Length: 203
Ligand code: NI
Image 1 (cartoon, rainbow, N blue to C red):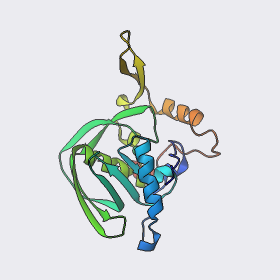
Image 2: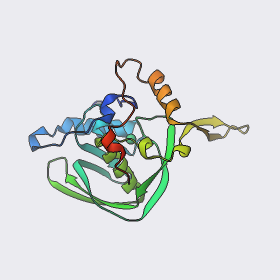
Image 3: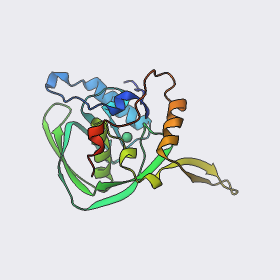
Image 4: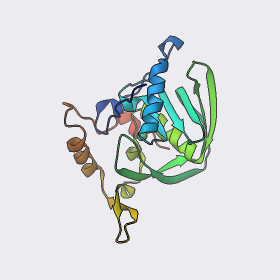
């Protein structure tokens, strides 16, 4: 197994609409294993293929008890009830923001062998699925986050030597600046904005 490189905000592939799997022979089992390994190693609860620069419709999600692998996922049903909670993303390290998501969803797609799969997810698991499926459509959580809720997260020690989180408010322009300089200097072309049609697609 190999660890894959997680691309960061500003990389144009994060704004692409990922392609469907059309035939079982297209499913690369080694790639799926690498994606899972990468998610675990990065301490993530979800990872979309798009985030390792492979624009195919595949996500892996975990609630620490179970691991879900789903290809061509679609949200078949959504609860009317929503919840707004803090999210982060491996493609946006050091940042968090509050996002409204449906509390419960039904996800349909294919398992790693190309067989039909349906998952009913609630709470955090439902949130992670919505976040990851967004990635397949070139949408990132900061597109949906309440603008005033965007914060840099730092871990600092207080006087007693206890580690605590420190939040520093930020906004989109500053985030783009940081990601241009810190993570994407080797890219000749950056794309921070989502494709226009996708911005309108709200919860
Ligand atoms: Ni993400």
